Length: 466
Image (cartoon, rainbow, N blue to C red):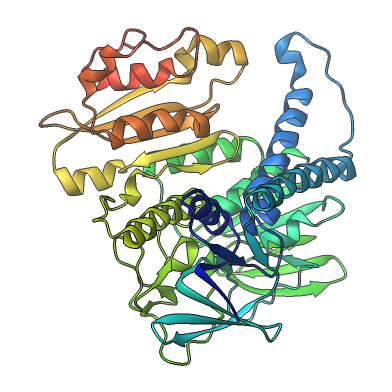
C-alpha cells in the first residue's frame, strides 16, 4: 500500500489547488478523482457556463448593433459552434491543470474513494478499484450534487440538471427554469439571449433570494424587460410528458407547457464515502468543520461544498490553501498564524445580464448587526464609461456603519460587476472607512469610478450625483 503525507479526495478547485500548494511546500500528496481534474466547476459548471455567457452577450450585442451606429446582422445562432468553443476552453484549462500536476510530480489516482478508516495513527483510503492508499492526513473535497424535488426525476433528456443543459446539442424552443437562484438565473439569461422562450419558476418571494433585497428586485425587473417570464411565490408540483411537450403543474393552479425543464433548486453536499470506524460529524448532510477546516476526526479536514458553507469555487480554493498552510505548520511544529475565514467577505457573483455581484453584508443584515447604517449609491447611467459602452443599466450600492463609516457591504448590478466587486472585497476585508477612498486615485474613464462615487455618496460627497 502506497502512503502519502496527505491524500485529497476530490480534484475540484479546492482539491487541485490544495495539492499544488502542498507540493510547493514539499509535502507528498495524491488526489483521488474518478473524473478529470477541475471538478464540476471547470468541467461542467463555472467555466463552461461563462463561455456560454460570453457567446450570449456577443450575440445580444450583435442584435443591438444599431445602438452603436453599426448595421444589425440578423444571423441565426450556430449553437454547435458555440458548444465547440465552450468545449475547447474546458479542454485547454483541464489540460493545463494536468500539465501542472505532471510537472510537480503530483499523483492523480483515477478512482473513486469508497471508504476512509483508521490505520494506526494514520488513515487508509479504500478505492473502488480494490486498491488502498495510506495517509497521515486526509482532506475531503468531494463537492456537491444537484438537488431535485419530490417525485421529479432528472433524466438529463427532458428534465435537466445544470450538467445536462450544458450537454444539449441544440437550443430548445422553450425552457422552464425551476429555481431562481444563481445557477437558474444565469441559464435563464443565457438561453433568453439566444432566443429561447424562458420561464423562471421560483417558490420564494424573490429571485437570487440570498442577495440584497433591492438588488434582487432590480435584477428581476431587468430580466422581465428582456422577455424572461419571472414567476415568484410559485412552486412546481408535477411534470407530465405530452405530445405538446412537458406540461408543468404549478402551485397556483395553472399549467405551463415547455420543451425542456432545468431543475435548479440547489445542490446537496456529496459525501458518498463509508467511515467504518465512525463518520465525521454532519449537519444536514454537510461535514461540520471548525475555523481551521478540521472535522471531528483527528487528521481529517474538509473543504468546499461538502462543508455546507458558501458553495463557491473560490471558497473551496481559499479553504484548501489555508489547510495546506496549517498542515505545513503542523509538520514543522510551528504555531499556525491562520486567521478564521470570514465567509461574508467572500465575493458572490451572478453572471446574468446585467451582472450582479456582492461582498459583505446586505442592507438588512447590516441593519440587524449594527443598527444605524449609511447607504451610498451611484448609477451607471451617470458613468461616462458605461455610456460609451452602451450599458448603463444598474448601479453600485455601498453600506457603512453609521458610527464610524466603516464599509461593511458592497453590491453591484451592471456591466462587469463580477470584475468590479474585487475592489469592494479589498476595501471591506481591510476594514476601510469611507473617507479612505479619498486616498485612492481611480482611472478615468472607467467603471470603477462608480465604486468611488458610491463610497463618496456615503459621506454625501459624490461629484456626479445630486
